[in-house]
Length: 281
Ligand SMILES: Nc1ncnc2c1ncn2[C@@H]1O[C@H](COP(=O)(O)OP(=O)(O)OP(=O)(O)O)[C@@H](O)[C@H]1O
Image (tube, rainbow, N blue to C red; front, side, top):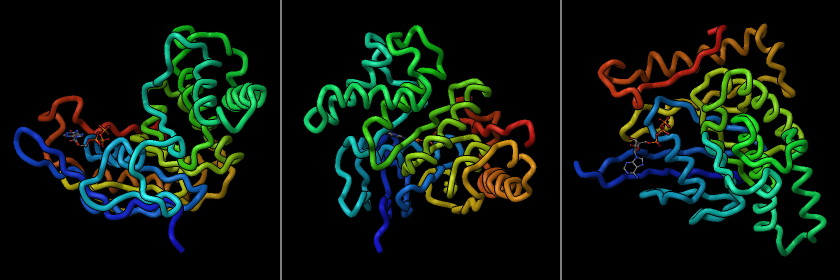
C-alpha cells in the first residue's frame, strides 16, 4: 500500500556564485495519515528546504513528493505551513486573520454562518476565543503563534507543516504550546511534519524522529521510532526510562555521529548548531 505522504528520493541543488550546491540528496520518507514526524539536524543541513519542497514552495531537482498519490507541484490549502515567526496580517484582528483563510478555503462550501462558527471553533481550540478583536501587535508572541496554528488548522489541511513553530517563544510558553499541540493532535489526528532543534520537543511530540546528516548533500541519517503511549504527559515522561533512552539516542546522533566538521567558534553565530536541551539534559 502506498504511503499517505511520500517524499520520494528528493534532492535539490541550488545555483550559487561558487557553482551548484547540492543541499539535499536522496531524501526518502513515507509518512502515514495521522503520524507526527519530527525533522531534526544541525543548523543549515536542509530541514526547511525539505519542508518547503513538501509545501510546494520549492521544486525538487530530483525525485518528488506525493500526497495521497498525487504529485505536489505547487502550494495548496491541503498543506498548511506554520513558521517560527508568526505570519499574521498586522492590520487584521485575530478573528479576521483566521476568517480570511476560512473564507479562502471554504468560501464556496460553507455558508457565512458556518464560516463564522468554524473560525470561532478553531480559535477556541487554541484558547484564543477571548481575544477575537485584538490586533497582532496587542497580543504576546505565544498568542500570535496560537492564532497562526488556529489559522492553519482551520484550513483543514491534510498535512500540517511546522517549521520551528515554538522556537521563538520563552520556555514556559513553549511548554504550553507543546501541550496544546499534543491535545489538538489527539483530538484531530493531524498528519504533522515538525522541524525542531529541541530534543525534548521531538521526543514528546513525535511518532518518529528523522535525524538528518550534515550538509551539503544532507540525507536521512537515522529514523527513530518513538514508541511511547498516547496521550503523553510530560511529567510522567520525565520519570520514564524509555523517554530518556529515546532522548539520549537523538543527542548521541547529533553530537557524536554528525557533529559539524568545523569547530563552533570558527563559524558565524547563525550557522552554529542550536541544540536546545532542557534542564534534565
Ligand atoms: N535558494 C537558495 N539558494 C542557495 N542556497 C540555499 C537556498 N535555500 C537554502 N539554501 C542553503 O541550503 C542549506 C539548507 O538550508 P535550510 O534553511 O533548509 O537549513 P535548515 O536545516 O532548515 O537550517 P536551520 O536549522 O538553521 O533553520 C543552507 O546551506 C542554505 O544556505
